[in-house]
Image (tube, rainbow, N blue to C red; front, side, top):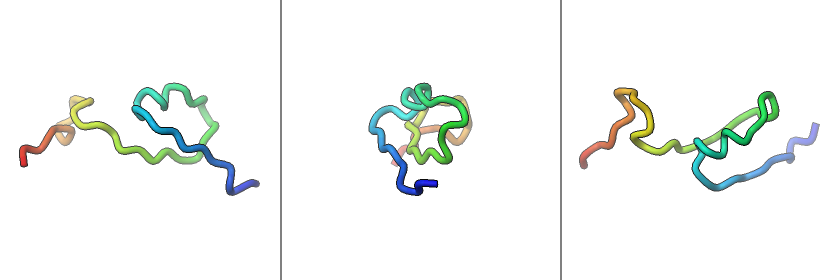
Length: 47
């Protein structure tokens, strides 16, 4: 197993993840954008 086999992609993670085939990766580390779901926790905080 090659532990140094990786790719870094920059862009909208919700769009980039659509390009990934099932069962081809071990981990995704993403900073999802605010306000893209209907979840209670997904709201912009007025600071």
